[in-house]
Structures are given as structure tokens and as C-alpha cells.
Length: 341
Image (cartoon, rainbow, N blue to C red; front, side, top):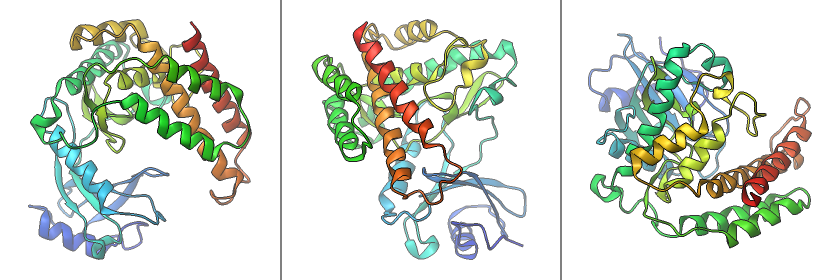
């Protein structure tokens, strides 16, 4: 029997859609939520013959659950699937809200490990960690070598002034969501605007490129996941973001997950050198992009804090909001340090 009570899934209607659009599927289907939260929801779907699929839909309770986001993400993954960048093969997209009250798309299931934190990466054999480190850089350089126009993504977003657009967006976000005055955030914003480098070229930018968004096995990346923040713009933004998430064993993580904390992975210097070699790009100014990434994340975390403070996140008895405050302060201080060196 299919499971009729999986939250976010209208089991019978989704099964009918599968029967109509997915060759070889054999209902009944069972659904298991494998990634949730405030981002898009991801479900593992299994049919009677043990065939596996992945279904993605918007978060529950999202008032404006338009078809645009799911169709866009499906379009990006389908297009990138025609390159050497590993992504899960797409199966189909449903924009008909009659089926599941929200749009969704379906991919093939890729068996692999997601290294969310040092707990998972501690299980990666030492001899595989360096190989995986190199793969992370080579796949990113491969993504940045793709001409968006060649795979039908030339109109995905504006290509020029990526940093200018991002600075305007996140400074607006900070102004609207800040819960207190924090002079360091304004100081960092001012320095980012004054030190903004010229954009050299425009590529596909993943927007959230880190080990926690990859399926890996035996020192290889089997699939890059979570393309919802993907856009066109400055490739070094991805490099700066990756380096910030690449926490070395003697550091205190500025964010929430740090799979490289266990050691045995390449250093940031190795990653930078390998990317330079693989891409042919000058990354000597990457400290700016790291500072921008910290500042942007600080604005995002402040937004979460604001929602907790204003009761928009429901019951918060078990939530220590001081953790969010400290994280914003740590991130903004890290950004200032990089801009001041």
C-alpha cells in the first residue's frame, strides 16, 4: 500500500502523475522525507519494484508556492546534465497545482553519502579525503567553464554586475530584518562597496557549492545537489563561498556545518591553487569574495533571528536565540578581518 499520510504529498494524485509521466514506474509508491526545513523539501520515492526516485517541492505553508521555482530548478539541472558536471538525471516536472497543491519535479535517485558535518566525513577513509578535495575544485572549475548560452541557460539571469546586485539585495535584507544596530555590518557593507572588484567574465554560479550539497562515494562526487540559488554572474563568488565552508581543523566554524573539520582534507591554499590551475582564473583577490560571503550569511542569519524574535517561527522554547546573535557577530567580524588585511 502507498502511504497516504506523508506530509506535503497527495499520495494518490502524485502516484497517478508518476504512472502517466515516468516510464517503467510500478505503483503503489511510498514516500519518505529525506531533507526538509525552510528550503525545498526532498522526498525519496520507492515503487513496488524497488525503483527509487527523488521528488522536490517547495516548503510547506509557503503562501506563494509558484511553479516558477520548481520549473527553474528542474530546467537548470536538466541543462547542467548535458555537461561533465555530475547531477542527478531529471525525470519530469509538474506545474499543475491540482496534482499536489504545489509544483514539484522528479529526478533519478543517486546512491551516495552527503557530508553534512564532521560526523559524516569522519567515516570517509583518510586516503579518499584528498582525492575528494581535488574533485570538489575540478567540478567547480568545470561548471565555470560552461558557456550558459550553449546549454540553454543564457537567459537565466542578468550576467553583469553580479556583486553590485548582490550588495543591493542583501543590504536591503539587513535593513529590513536587523534586530539591533550592529556597526560592524554597516562598516563591512561600506568596505565591500568601496573595494568591489571588476567582474571578469560571467558564468553559471551555483550559489551554495559545498560538501553538504553533494552526493559522494569513494573519493568521487556522484552528484551536485541544491541548485535553487543558481544564477549567472561572477564565478569567484562560488570560490569564496566554498573556502569559507572549508573549515580547517584548528578553526572555530563560523557557520553551522563543517565537514572538513576532521582533518585529512586539502588546505584552502591547495583548493585555491588547484582552482587557478583548472580554470585559468586569477584568484589572488578571493579574500574579497570570502568577506562578501560571510557578510551575506550574516544577513541571512539575522533574518532567521528576526523571525524567531517576532514569533514567526512558532514555538521557540527550545531555541537559544543568543546563538543566532553570536553567529551574526562572528560572521561580520570575520568579513571585516578579511577586508582589513
